[in-house]
Length: 232
Image (tube, rainbow, N blue to C red; front, side, top):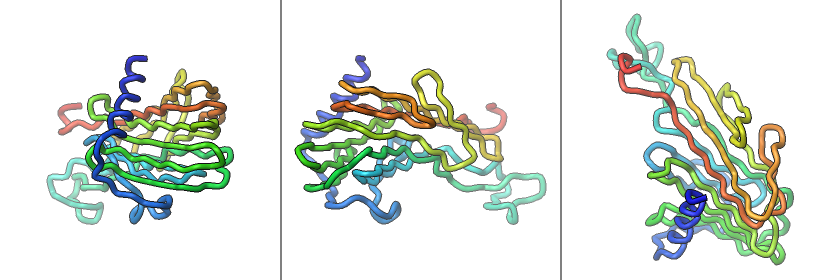
């Protein structure tokens, strides 16, 4: 509970700060051109901000397909016999929230506060004001996604989708994504949800949220990368 309150306090403090802010009046439709980046040095994220089907693309800094490469070869064709190649950086997956019904959207705003590293999406649907805030905490090593529905309820499906041949399973109340590229590097992401005045239920490979006023989604992700084969 103390951790939950600390994360919510971070959102409140950031929202009250004087912003140096990038602002948009529509959701991102192109990841490269319109997505807004966040990160903590390890976890990287790009937020899109769509009310109906929101998506956060995620990765970690050490998710790579390469091996040790003293020859400096960038690919299979360029490496020396018996040595690895440089490989390429990889995306891990998407964290998504699909609303049961987004209704008619008005007064839409999407913003990235550069000073506080806080992404905020807000809009109105009928009498309900929806707000979604994202930041990536360095001390807590998690991505935090705060979803609220003032004068309404939060209803939809939260999903974690991998970009490779991953395995997705439940471990207690955590949704766990694991995978291993051909180079033997192992990666993992875990998602946990706290909902206020509502319900959360397992639904296939996702989490169904219903009836709540707000929810906090926490995601941790990392790989087992170490520098040098002699280290493990």
